[in-house]
Image (cartoon, rainbow, N blue to C red; front, side, top):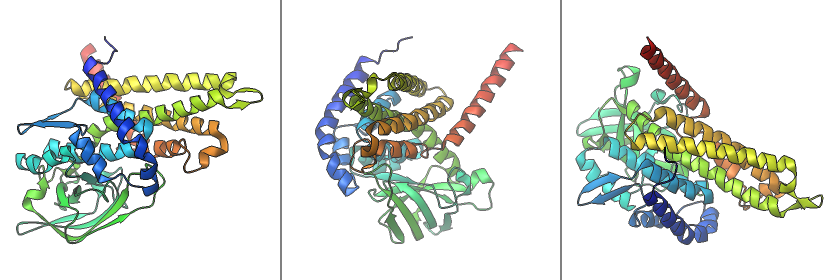
Length: 388
């Protein structure tokens, strides 16, 4: 069992870190002031080949899960809010088209998306429907040549920035719970679309936007995947996205930890550096060990996906563990800075809030525990069957 990162993955990480030094760090202060990531940054990411897929001669290939996870961890160490902008473009938007799009949709949507020319997001959560995806109320009524969509998507990251949204809606209200929903690619500039950017305190400088759909027409070719399979499709998108959001949450923890330790080595209290006190040094040791354990879980989940194995259990454990440690590390780091940590412009201020946000995306902690328990139960059944 080899725990060393492959040489090509290390080389890719080194190149990406240099890219971040040149194109993110110098601009971060302005992006935070504007509370927006400029479209030009996503376009640059696409030109440099950092948007999760490669296209050559009409053939599209997805980058390895481990490679993508390491990139997003490095970005989140600097800014989880910028990382989530990239994550949505790759793991919710482009990934949805990659998984369920027709060849025509991949040509018209995925190819420009991975160049950064077309920005995509996902519209799923509603005012009264979150973890229970099947209970969404947005309607898609069949009409000649397409569909009419009506409803509200409450919290869509990147929706203020994006050109298209993958929207889940009830296409078959009389069908069973698992067959009611379908997924549509909706032009966010279409007549009947209203977008309202919400004021939030987490994942700055990304946007969180409400999408209102008032009798919005979408053509038949805008149906993504199979009619009546929208629930299964959005859940599969979330299952895949738990890998990069786990890596992003790990990066959140690492970024906060590094700030905290650097400060605690320099700041003196009662005549000594804070980190020289046993209580704080033991806390640092404990948190560092648990971050490393969480990283191993992230890497294991990525390895399983890259090997073509079922990775849902590992992905949920990775997300659960990274959220737990990010919450604790970021609060610990903020405490070390004392009152300075509550100042909005302070570098450590964002990390506790962004760790909180990570617990909500792609399933809450309770949802992860539910998936983990179901996976554990299945493993026990398989083990008992093998022994009988």
